[in-house]
Amino acid sequence: MQKKDIDWSKLGFGYMKTDWRYSRIWKDGSWQEGGLTDKAEVTISECAGALQYAQTGFEGLKVYETKKGEIVAFRPDLNAERLQRTCDRLVMPKISTGDFIDALDQLVKANLGYVPPYGSGATLYIRPFIYGCGPVIGVAPSPSYEFRMFCTPVGPYFKGGVKPIRIMLSDYDRAAPHGTGDIKAGLNYAMSLYAGEAAHKAGFSENMYLDAATRTYVEETGGANFIFITRDGRKVITPKSPSILPSITRRSLMVVARDYLGLEVEERPVRFDEVSSFAEVGLCGTAAVISPVGQIHTKDGDVDVPSGMQEMGPVLTRLRETITGIQMGEIEAPEGWIHRIC
Ligand SMILES: *Cc1c(COP(=O)(O)O)cnc(C)c1O
Image (tube, rainbow, N blue to C red; front, top):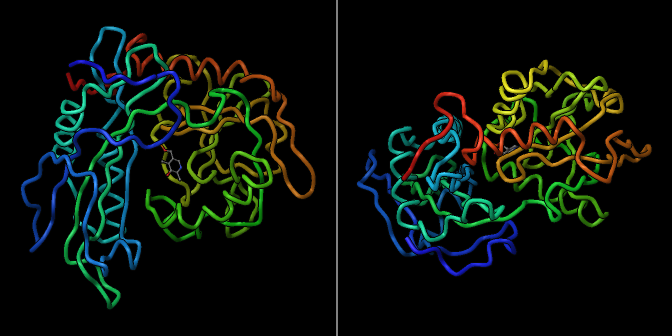
């Protein structure tokens, strides 16, 4: 299909309306037949569960044009499974992994002109979500739901791409210890906006959260998990906590670190006061892939990460190059990681 006339290199991380999106309604106890629509707006009850009680969950994944010209998605089965967990926790009906991937295939094939060309540095971001669209005034699950999936071509998440960023440690908590911190839900993002804006206003890219119960351990930022590289450059450590979102990028990076780069990997609680002992600090997620952190600002002073503010450290650079090489079809992927759409 003819590519759309878009200046791919100028894209930031933003929404662009594309031609088609997928929609499927759940009502009267079952999923109706789904399909593509060109309507980019939704009309729902003013009393919809999503609007009144934040009964809504989402996913985010990327589609790539590979070196060979194939159009592929990176581990979409894990996004489907995570959305199923989110639906369970928010009492919403689930979409099967098969139906999720079928919707993805239909959506991408209908919008092929928006898939950024190989080597452009841009990708097609896919946003699946499920929300309660039927009316609820007493606190209860919504009587009806929409599963929707749209796509938008995107460039780098942070301005400057892989330049180190400065983040801030504030007194805000992202998620309660036994709350919903481990699901991808709008409610967690709504609760992180205030701290995120405070960080932005103070000149930082993100806010860093500690565990709400003890304020001792590193959790994550509003939308990305942490990885740390030890001073000897041989080990990747990532925080373990029941209230952080299980990032697919982070889980994939741990496999890449171990199996492709021969590094040791460890998932364990990480105290904030240990952070200054690491050589490199990275934020990882689908949107940013890996973003290096150069400095962490706290009210007791700044933590300067040894890899500095000039460029990404050497281990994070190798991790980033390897995972993007796998995603773009330049490096052979582990079995089952790449879903070919066409
Ligand atoms: C989506 C998300 C991430 C990153 O997860 P990926 O699966 O790697 O995209 C990290 N933290 C939060 C809170 C998220 O919502």
